Length: 78
Image (cartoon, rainbow, N blue to C red; front, top):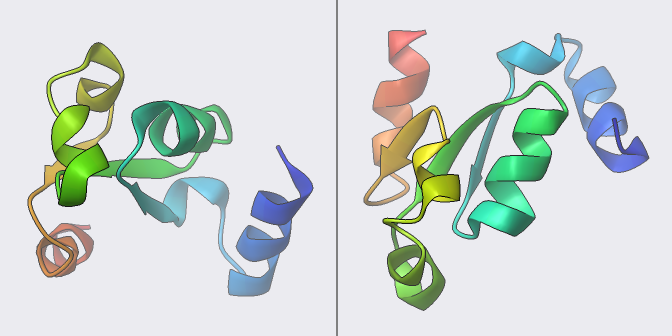
């Protein structure tokens, strides 16, 4: 797990699987976060979010969000 991710997880005082990583670029956000054991959400917002929305890597995310406010529902469901 990359040091920066480990530092964030440690600071939060939770396990990696309890962290939700939200990002708009599947290869820079979703795939690395999943590799670290984090839960992931692909954000279909802005040019990058829409450009990659139908990619296989974006579909690998645990959730697909149309906006940041939707992450509240994801967290509440946990």
